[in-house]
Length: 127
Image 1: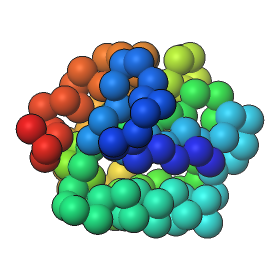
Image 2: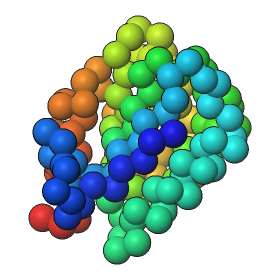
Image 3: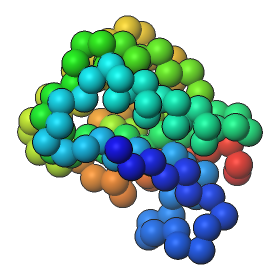
Image 4: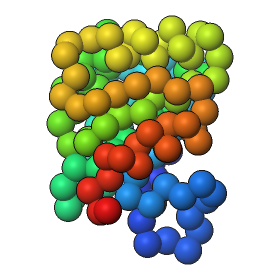
């Protein structure tokens, strides 16, 4: 699982992720409660100065367990969550992920990172 809390770095990719936490779930894997908890811990570390938006890339993920969905649903440090996937299967998994308990923050599924980033810009705390 790759996590990038990209602020104040010289290698910021384009488009800019500054002020946004980016997590890439491993393609081809079943996302378990343990994996979700590890990602959640990384998000909390990145949000030390308060909440920040989360860009969650799920492209190619095989599945997400109900227990993992519960962990993601309990997230409280994100100001907004953009879930990004490329395929119709990713969209189904994204809808499952977002369809749990009432969200603690705005969230939406996108088919590209650029769309997700544009939407998240309005939820950054450093503006």
